[in-house]
Amino acid sequence: MSYQYRSAYDAPSISNPISTPTDFYHEGVYRQFVKRVFDILLVVAVSLPVATTVALLALVQFLSDRSNPFYFQDRVGRNGKTFRMWKLRTMVRDADAMLECYLSDNPQARSEWICHQKLSNDPRITPLGRFLRSTSLDELPQFWNVLIGDMSIVGPRPMMTAQRVLYPGTEYYAMRPGITGFWQVSERNESSFHERADYDQRYFRAISFLTDMKVILRTVVVVLKATGR
Image: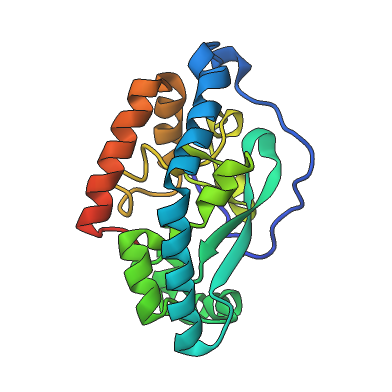
């Protein structure tokens, strides 16, 4: 099967809910109610150390190049609704324009981008950004997204709006995207973008408190190994 390349910034507008996989939908107290309560309680519990760490990293980021240390991007959430996801900035300014130029000049990099929707050697990432990504510290601002209900602690990796046309699954749309999840603690940087649908399907079927706790514990190991990108 072939997939057409789409620019990261020619995304279609997503405003209306879309259908979710009702044929596979599982009712349950945890899925319907407790998971959201768990998210809120965990965010509140870690709010002080997370807020302190984000403030310090943002200050270091600002002092390094005198630019906005935060970055936001529209992502696809539950039911296909778009939300604004926050991160600590890890790339140079005008990163989107730089990506287009880089892919135009590097066919091999374009093939890698089409397959994985990320680059193993991304020229847009700053030295500090590489550290933030390898330790996943750039994702700490997403605890705010969890608090306001856009995301969950554990769930599918948030999809960019332009990637929706490339995504082959449906389970993603029945869940809140997660700060961590099956994909994030598995091959993480090695699987293709389309293989993420399999991780999302397996997580959708396995959602439970025990599953989420296992993912969170495995996430700690991944972060300590600093294998993120």
